[in-house]
Image 1 (cartoon, helix red, strand yellow):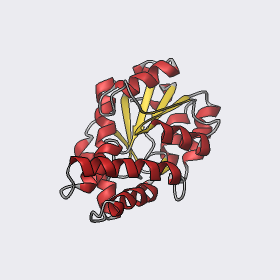
Image 2 (image 1 turned 180 degrees about the vertical axis):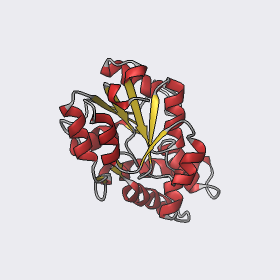
Image 3 (image 1 turned 90 degrees about the vertical axis):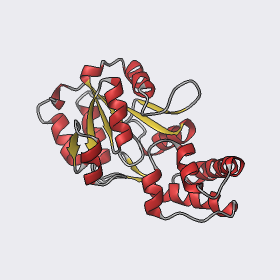
Length: 222
């Protein structure tokens, strides 16, 4: 895979561009406490991330909650998280220089995330104004990752082909999504999955330990 030939770069959000774990954990445990359910550790919630907020809350509430209580917890989570999604969240070190370098070299960029669209839009506007061209989150009519729909929509909005695009994510869900869309995948090791797990579940990915490494690979020969 020659990263210097990539004209578009699509990023996952949580665990890739932003460290959102603490705000997500706070929102989950707020909802669980309100429903009188046992709280979850930060490590539990880290492990549950990747398949959208419904999966996150369902796994966090199991096995004590029935369907109705889980739905109530999801409603509480969404309301709390939308109000507090920027309390502790911040870009990983090196992300802003990476995005600035891509912009300077004419590489088009997008976010594709299983987060709620409202949360994706708010976070992108707050942290990445002028740095990201397109931000796609969970909404009606488009399947969540690992289905390829979100990535394919990102390609359409960026006017890019799969061959000239790189997808960057931090989980096995991202890798499977890239495979389904026919897009090369860079798997980052600074996010929500451990290195051993990623190497087992993402055998065809190119791995990066720091945003500076990815920046160098994408821009060195431009």
